[in-house]
Image (cartoon, rainbow, N blue to C red; front, side, top):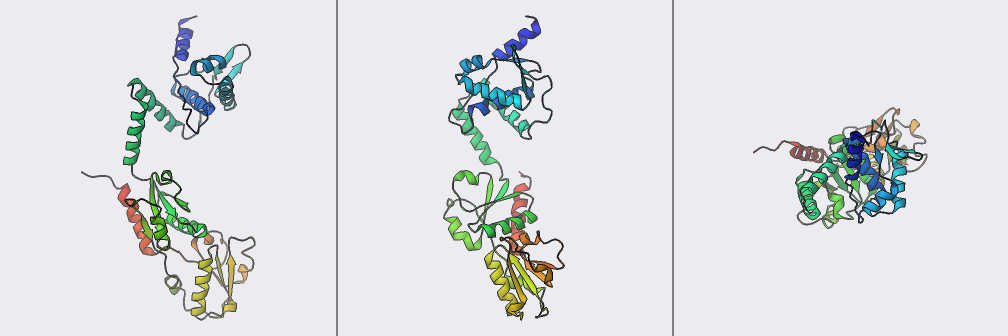
Length: 317
């Protein structure tokens, strides 16, 4: 065995892998991920022979079938190749565009390798990581709203107003849902949402815009004009219809469409204008006059933007 091959053999013999039996990630995936990271980081070189299935299973006390499945997964993704009668080798040409999260995985893996060199107990490492995660600023808004039709509309308006990611949930099932989140709710749901949160948790409460405020700029209008009202949120349909009738429109001139149902846009080509929420408006390209009525008040939009600015602003001593 020449020096190069000896060095490669020693690297393989010393290859460190670790497995969590309590994780929801399979041992097969844990194995495959760590080998990919070793290839990407240069710990394993192109053309380098990997331990046999039996050897790896014996050394790390995992089932041979699990190791075999991990190797097959790596072969399928073109990280390794099977050479008949010789063994399993790192491919000479490995993928040049691994998954986008691979760089982050590599950093995390290097962190744990460094922690092991310090002989730091895993419990201490977890505790410190948790502390650092809790110190990081939130990275997304989380809209908590049980009415999912309403939630989708408001989520769309929030995305137009801020640059942070916006997500929504119907309720808080676990504390994990709140990790890295800025909890947000609507004033009409605030009492129910507060009961789901700890007393010390921050909660940004948003207000809905009044129907009168939305309609004011479009009135007066010809009372006999045929107007469409479209939304997947029933209260929007009801409130818009009520306000238009109050403004002098005849009920027979109002065409209501529930945008959550198939064929909902039928007949809307015949109306003079379509009154709709901001999410439905995105599906009405090509119509002559679409009157987009935002649900969030201007003040609430401003509060969202101010909150985002406050967490993005650099810390000053």
